[in-house]
Amino acid sequence: MAILPIVQTGAEVLRQKCTQVEKFDAELHNLLNDMRDTLKDAQGAGLAAPQVGVSKRIFLIDVEGDGIVEFVNPVILGVSGSQYGVEGCLSVKGKWGDVKRPRKVTVEAFDRYGKKFKYVGRDFSAKALSHEYDHLDGILYTDKANNLRDEV
Image (cartoon, rainbow, N blue to C red; front, side, top):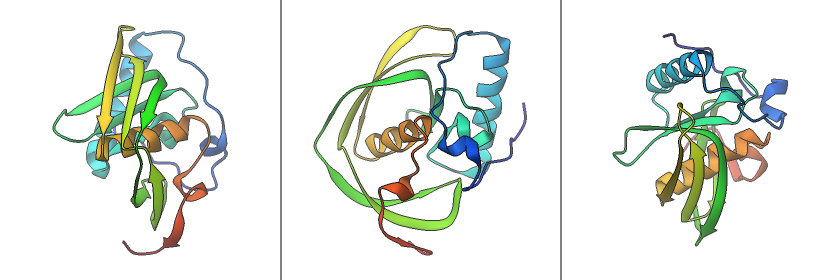
């Protein structure tokens, strides 16, 4: 396991639409383990594979007492409500902005072993799910943010 370098704004991988994971194998498990270590080290709420230079549809979130949840090939099944709040990003150092996100997000994804599951995120976890999912389509929160600034 290792802490991976986090790619910063301007890197091409952050603007690519990621590809589906085809193999649920040791290589995927190693990547997920390294992403876990990287997320813990960075003390973030989430981390998507493109943020560590890998253009695959994978992200992790660590919010609301569920521990770190891994999402492989996630699909958003539904969203409802709305909330407006401050966001930052591990790939956009030192910047903050106000972003409108859903208040509830339902996601279907696979775990590291290829088993399908459903996850419902509310409030902060809905924000994190939406933010990380955007990374998989090459979208940064700064594309949606109002009042982009250097401090919270």
